[in-house]
Image (cartoon, rainbow over all chains, first blue to last red; front, side, top):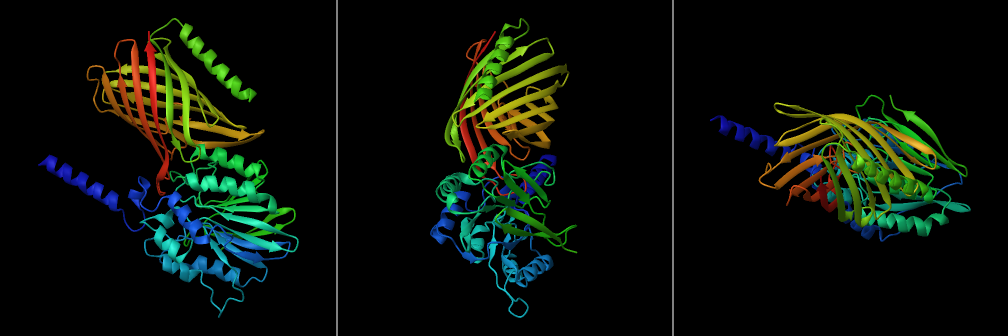
Length: 291
Length: 225
């Protein structure tokens, strides 16, 4: 009898672990439950045809908004605050959300609603660029992300009189760039970096592990950090924007500035977003903490 | 480049010192890995390592590895073992260094372990310092761990193990980056052993979304005396 009970408990535990709930995709921690990063890369490049998805016009000195990890669930108050601030700011050229857009299965349309342009209260309609996060992949979330949000690997330009800046959005939602994206990134930087004043890269997971802010949650393998740091330094990348950690971090390594933006999810202790001022001499930050 | 050569030299000097130490059981092994990694593509790696029992309770395992994508690793693992009636307790230390292009990675850790005919495990803390061109970063919150099971506990000269670890020899990864290893060990004689490892490493475990990262097969030949 005891053996039967033990087997039933083991079976039930396994079933719960495999099914998870609609927040944690426990099965996905062990095996891919969505399309793999190489497949997502191919689909993204096919969608964009390898061209810039947008050319944003700006002055030589301009500013853009960044936030990350809104984890939209039953509410999206902070995300709405961010969206309203961006789209009523005449000095803002565009916005970037660094991934983990949603926290729960089925909330993607809710996120789209949170970041929509509302002509009744928004004086501007700047583009908003999204990065794919690990939570966005849970429960086979890629197909819906591609349909409602867009590709996970792409690039865009900011053009001003006398030059342009390069913005590359990478897919690190699995904690790795994968084979094809890594190869593409190396070739893309080698062939194009010299055409631009600044190069700013946006990705979700963090290359570094200098604090324990994420505790057991994964970031990128240490082994993959080496070649990426080397690649970014070699091509004089100006700034690498990252999320995922829910904790602000800002450091410079070999001339490249690596910044992790804290979360903007609600509720959380210190929600924040970032205004990045870009000019001939580089970037300057203006942190905005939400109440 | 000079540092890389220095690392290799130190490793072989270390191995040499192990081999000339007149003490307890000694073992020297040569390993060849071949596999695929999402960043480096197809790769192979050659390692030489040795284990030497200095006393009945103290042993040192150390060695060096060179991988075709330009990484050199050296590692030393002194261990103190204490037999008990229900297994052997271990106090472990790990000293690790890797060099790849201009990057250097130095790590030092201490931990405890336990082994018996059915399983072996270890858990410890390590501190990592890494960087290049004089710019250093640290990782102060790492742990290393290993959990292994003997699936066929020493049937004649065969052993089959299943291992879950982030601290495979020469690969000291962050705690959220474990490898899954199936290891087959065959000892055709008392002096010679053959080890085959099949190792799978996924990225994005632990509250993430897993994907393939690395797969390799390792063949090792060891000699004991």
